[in-house]
Image (tube, rainbow, N blue to C red; front, side):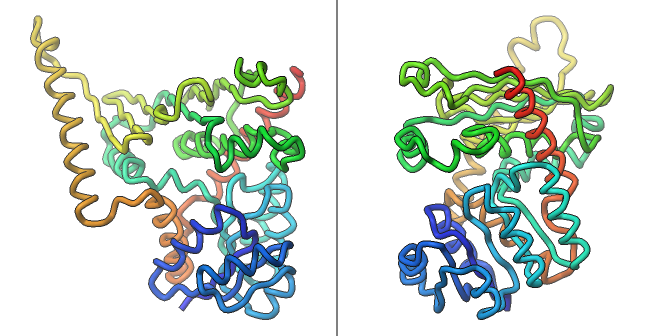
Length: 359
C-alpha cells in the first residue's frame, strides 16, 4: 500500500484525488490547506480520514509515502523541501518551480535523500503522446528529430481559470516572473524538452499582450509568446503559445530525416507521414487517400478505447500518477526524467529574462 497526502485543496486537487484512488493499493491519508474549510470540504467529499491546515503537522501525523503539491507556484520550493526532508516522494504540479536554480536544488535534494519527484506535465502521457513516443523510438523518423513545431493554445473564456485571473488583480499568477505564461507554457515546452539533445538550449523569445487583453486595459499580462529554440546543430524548435487561435489547436510536429509525426493533442490523433516515391500525378491522387486512412484509423482507435472505458478526460493524469507510483514501488526511474524537468525550467527562465529585458 502507498499512503498519499495532498497539500493545496483548490480545484485541481479534485483531479488528483480522483486519480490517486484509481491506483491499485493507493490510499489518501490526509489533505492540507492553509484555509481549514477548504481542507475539510475536500476530505469530506473524497472520504479522506484526516485534514490539516499545517503541512508540517500533517507530515508528522500521517507520515505519507507520497505528497502531491497543488498549491500556487511560489510555494512549491519550500513545500517540496519540507516533504523531501520528511522522507516523502513528491508529485509537484506545474510549473515545477519559480526558477531553474530552485528546480536544481529540489531534484538534487531528492537524489541525496533517495526520494523521487515528478512534475504535472501529464499531457506527455495522453494516448497520442504515448503512441508518438513509441513511434519515434522505433526509428520512424530516421533518428532524432531535426526540427520540432509545438503549438499550445488557451482561452480566456475558461470559467475555471481564465475568467478568474482576469477578474482578480491580486491573483497569485500575476506575481510570477512570467505571469500567465509561467503558469501554462511548461506543458508545451516539456513536450519539446523530451526530444532535445542538450540540457540547456538557446532560446530567442518574443511576447506581447493580445488585442483582447489590450481592449481590457490588462497589458500587464502577456498572453502571446513566440520562441525559437536551438540545440546547436542538432535540433531546432518553434514554440507558439496563443490565446487567439481557439482551444482546438494543440499539437506537436516532429520532423526527421525519413518521416514526420504529428500528434494532435486536442483531437487525440497521431498522423505518421513518410514520403512516397510515386511517379507523375499519382502522388496527388494516392497521398490524400493514405492520409484519409490515417484519420479513419485514429477515429476507430478512439472509439475502441471509449468502448473499453479507457477514454476519460483525465487519462493522462491517471497514467502519470500510476507510472510515478509504480516507479516508487519497483524502484525504477520516474516517468519524467529529471533532465527534462530541468531543461523545461531553464527554457522558461531564459524566456522570462528576455521578456523582462524587452519590457
